Image 1 (cartoon, rainbow, N blue to C red):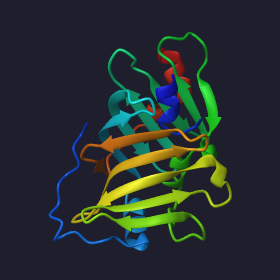
Image 2: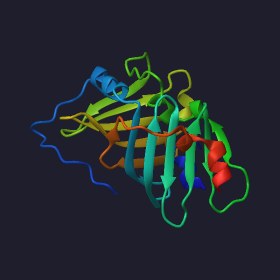
Image 3: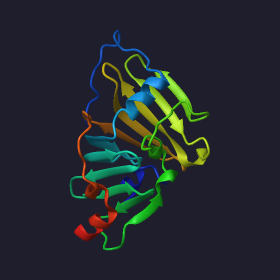
Image 4: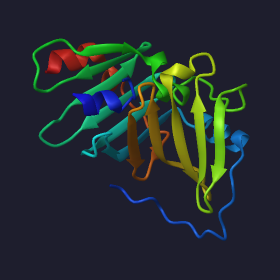
Length: 199
């Protein structure tokens, strides 16, 4: 289950190409505005775990505070976040899901009701590689929880990838396919009790 835990950093779709000459570094205000512009989103993802293994699946986001990682393949696990908690369902176990506080994961920063990357000490890195803007952010009150490195392209602004740097030194990369936003997502998608009944 390590790979599912690392999806939220508790311990492959190609990036769309953009001509480097046309790309510009995005400001923190532009990125915050983009993240605040949608409440729901979904995308296919490819996850590269700390041990080099790969996993794929579908990601669903419903801000504030809700996310669903639906893994495919033989280890079709499930990670949900709702009501301030993360639930990790192991398809090979009959035990109840493991649970953790959402606030202990760096991903909680982009699941907030209002994202403000200009908050004091939240952003610890803001770079541009000629194509993408990369922002590294952490909870300023709890830097020991690790940090999240977010990659954005412009024209239009879109989240393409994140890298979770966990508090114990582990690293997990999630590469996103084309992200759709603004759709209706049922609450049951993020219901841990529903997922438990459906096992």
